Image 1 (spheres, rainbow, N blue to C red):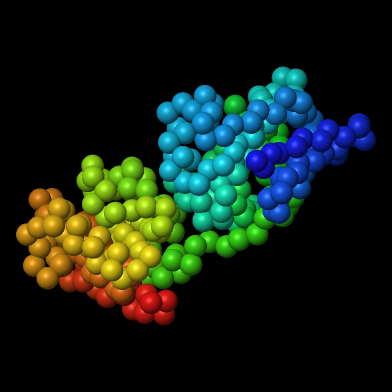
Image 2 (cartoon, helix red, strand yellow):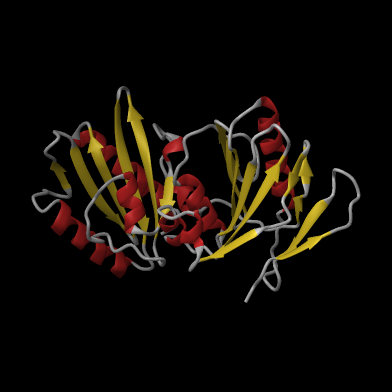
Length: 300
């Protein structure tokens, strides 16, 4: 079993580090700061796995378990008369899974840490390689903000793991795309958290599939585009039939007007299923589907 070994070095001043080895895994978090801006790390580092994570974030563990979460390490930094700073490092097994968790609650602007990040109200969230990191000051002050960002940069610089965003994202049409709305996943429960489709897994999402949901704007209207990649064309065809039979049985040529007066449309592009939800018109829905299928021609 891969284990994180915490090696606490002798005191060498305020810049000393806690070295962290990832055992036989090959990629690693190289070092975690022992001190930052006067905040000192507690020597007690809490560790959680897939069976114990709910003890730390009961009610929130489901998000991580919907991905290939492996372990979490929690560090507490304290400074007199200042709020504690809590740093959580999640080993998500793959860069795609780390990106998926990062996108699950994304609301802020990119701040330039790791491969993707955001900071808002004392909370820094970023991912790099296969790691997702959350650093939060219990109360935001000017000094705690500096500390949170300093810790984030130090940890991001020490992560030796490499990896880019999922290739599927590059196939989203750019016109009208709201970048901060992108959600990446392969579990139908995560889809329902962002756009409710059905209680049952009618799109047949599994860890062998990959899915991205994003919002698009046109003037004052907004719509959703869901793009799902399957292992094979046969698999995609089966999922497409399941979705249409359950969600839009009255559709004509893959498009239907829903009870809210908006349009849902779907198309099968080789081993990919694309769905547009809440489009302001049937023409707009068809146009977005055509655009995404053109993008997908490159990787079919």
